[in-house]
Amino acid sequence: MPLADIGVNLGDKRFAADRDAVLARAREAGVALQIITGTSVEGSAAALALTEEHPDLYCTAGIHPHHASEFSSSSLNDLRHLAGNPKVRAIGEAGLDFNRDFSPRPIQEKAFSEQLALAAELGLPVFLHQRDAHERFLPILREQRDRLCDVVVHCFTGNREELFDCLDLDCHIGITGWVCDERRGLELQRIVGNIPLPKLLIETDAPWLLPRNMNHKPPVNGRNEPSLLPWVVTQLALSMNRDSDEIAQATWQNALRFFRIEP
Image 1 (cartoon, rainbow, N blue to C red):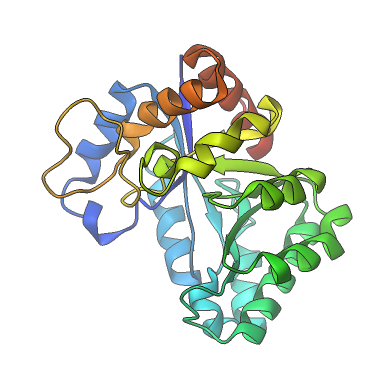
Image 2: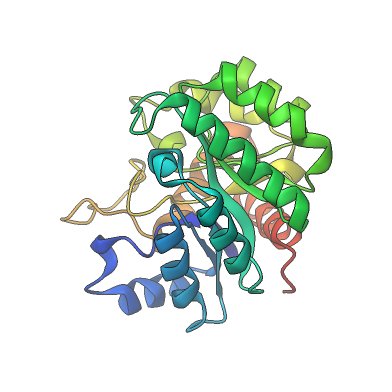
C-alpha cells in the first residue's frame, strides 16, 4: 500500500550529505509521494529545484511565520511566480507561531492573510502552520475560507476544541510523529479518532518529530526521515481503532485528491 508524506523538509541541511539514500529508503518503505515544504522564497525555490529531479516529489511555496519579517509585495510576487510551476501544489507553509515569535505578531498575521488571498487567487490549496496562536489563526482563516479550495492544518498538535474548530471549517488535518510520542502526544492519541478518514493526512515533518514508537533502535543522529512514515500509520491505527491498511489507503487517496496529483 503506497504512502504519501505530505510534509517533509528535504531541503534541510541535515539531508544534504545523503539525500539520495534518504529517498531510496523512503521508496523502499512504500512512501511513493512526498511533498517538500517551502518555508521562505529561497527555500521554496530550492524545494522546487529538488522536485524537478524526481517524479515522485512535489512541493509547496510559502513563507513560514518564522520568516514573516521577510514578507513583502515583492516576496508575494515571487511566490506567485513559483506557484506557476506545476510541481508546486499548494501555498504554504503559512500561518502563525506565537510560541517562538521569531517575527512580530502583526507581521505574521499580514503574511498569513495575504498568502491565503494568493492561494484563493490561484486556486491552490493551502498548507498551514499554527502554534499557540489558535485564537488569532481561526478568525483569519475563517474570513477567507469560502474562497479557498482546500486547507490542511499541518502537524496538528492541538486539543479537542481546536480540532473541531478546524474540522468545522472543512480543513484536512495533518498528523505527524507527535501522535507516537508517549510524553507529549497522549491527548492527540485520544482525539484523532474524531478525524473523519476523508480529512486525514499523514506526514513526517522530517527531519523533526522522530516517531517514538519504533520497535527498533532509532537513528544515531536522531533524524527523522520519510521512510519512518509507516510508524505514524501504526500509531494512528491503534489510536483510531482501525486497520493500518485502511489508514494507508485513505491517506494516500486523500493526498492525491488534496494536491490534485494523478496517481
